Image (cartoon, rainbow, N blue to C red; front, side, top):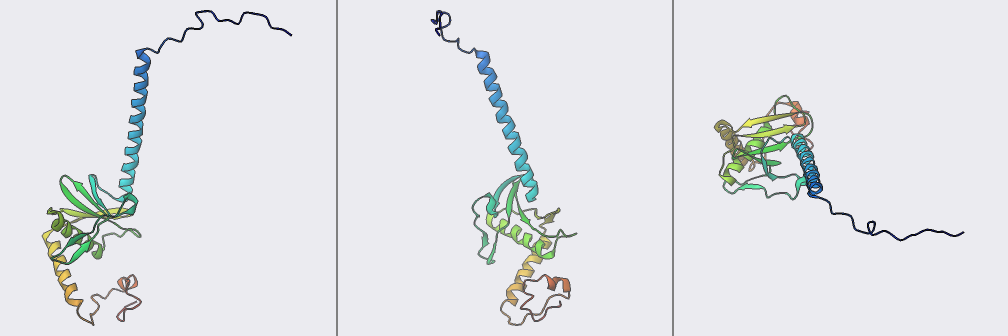
Amino acid sequence: MGCSGDFSRSPAESTPPEPLGPHWHSMTSLYIALAILLIAFVLFFISGRQRRLAGLPGGRVVYTDTRTWGAVEKPLFDVQLGLTGKPDYLVEQNGKLIPVEVKTGRTPEAPYDSHIFQVAVYCLLVQKTYGKRPPHGIIHYPNRDFAVDYTPALESALLDLLSAIRRDEHHSDVKRSHEDEQRCRHCGFRKVCDQKLA
C-alpha cells in the first residue's frame, strides 16, 4: 500500500516559534516569588510551633544544650564559685539573656524548689559569664511554664545554699534536711540512704 502526498513543509511551518514576551517572564517571576513566600510562611509556622513546644519565649536563641539543634555548647562556668551549669536554652530578649530549663514528666501546680534553684544557678552563671543579669529564668513543664524572678532575695538564698553544700560536702555524716516522705520516694539517693523516710 502506498502513500501519496507532499510531506514537505511550507516556509511558514518551518520557522521557529516567536520568543515569549515580557509578560510571560513577569508572570513566571511572580509565581516564583509567591512560591518562595509560601515556603517562608510554612517554615516560619513550623519554627514557631517547635519553639512553643520547647517552651521558648519570643527572642533569639543564643545557646542550646539540646542535641537536636546541633552541637552542645560549652557549659557556663564560674571559677570563683566553682560552679558549672548548662541551661537547655539561653534566649536573648530585648537585650537580656533568659535561661530556659525544659522539664519532662508531671506538671506541678508550682515549680519544685530544686528546679527554682537550678534556674537561679543559671541566672547567676549568665550574669558571671556574660555580665548581664537576667531579670528571670523560665522553667518549662509539659503543660505549663513558670517565670522565676531572679531577685536579690533568691540570689542570696542560692548563695547560702551553695555555702551549706560546700560545708556539708566535707562531713561524713550529713543529716536529712526534711521530713517529707514524698521527697524521699523520688530521691536519686534513696537506695543508698540510711535516713530515708519511705
